[in-house]
Amino acid sequence: MKMNQIKLQIESSISDLEKVILQSNSYGDLCRYYDLPKNGKQYKYFREIIEKNNISTNHWYVSKNKKWIDIERICPQCGNRFLTKSGGKESNICCGYQCSNVYFSWKRNTEESRKNKSESIKKYLLSVGKLPLKKIKCVICGKEKLPKRKNQRCCSNKCAAKLKVSNPDYIQKLKNAQRKLIAEGRHKGWKTRNILSYPEKFFIRVLNNNTINFIPNKPFDGYFLDFAIDDKKIDLEIDGKQHKYQDRKESDVARDKTLTDKGWKVYRIEWNSINTDDGKQTMKEKIDKFLEFYNGA
Image 1 (spheres, helix red, strand yellow):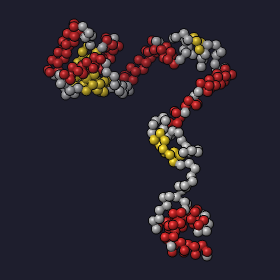
Image 2 (image 1 turned 30 degrees about the vertical axis):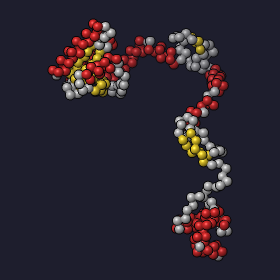
Image 3 (image 1 turned 135 degrees about the vertical axis):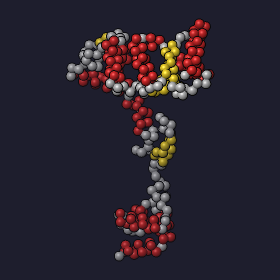
Image 4 (image 1 turned 60 degrees about the horizontal axis):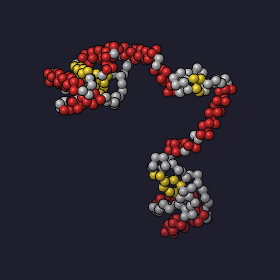
């Protein structure tokens, strides 16, 4: 009965309720002021009255005596601005976990911690017999080092890569694997080629000076065309010394046949040095021959 009288009093004087809400900070404060039990049912009652009469509660849950306030900081790792608490457990130095992991990595990866980890790993490997007690001599640089695995021949991954490249059987194995993919039609070619050689940069100027429209390094059917002149379907190739090797000659023949079967004309220019007057004259003659071919195509 008392509760119904209190609610009737509240609903009959909304202006008084607004004053109480202005002095309060939560639904719990309202329940204490009106001597009502603090539970979900009373919270729902006050929420419905507040929404019905459009009473503002924006000041709630922002205590004047709040210990930690919201502040803006600049992340020392990425430089972004972010909001955090002025202290306590919710106070952050960095804007997120990723920046925090990088910024505080020095704490986890100190010289002492790395040394302790290394010693504990070595101790374990020695105890289970997976690490030899004797040092090995790197077959590439000659540096002596305790190995981390059985049958280790090099001191680092860098030296191990050099050892692989120096092995002709390994190189031949890679070549055979790629040739098998090409023969089975499963080779997708290079995805990108963003590096331009000096001869290619030179011929970019030549083509631009002669107002010839072209696309450099155009991907086509698993290959890259040095200079694709689409309006006349001409593939201009600038060949360096590597094209004189027998295996490269064979691949060039197969490549040119693929292009010619699809209606393209392949024109190859062998690059020569232009550091001398004779070299410049030779290159000029090659360019003139190509321009004659282009105009007659």
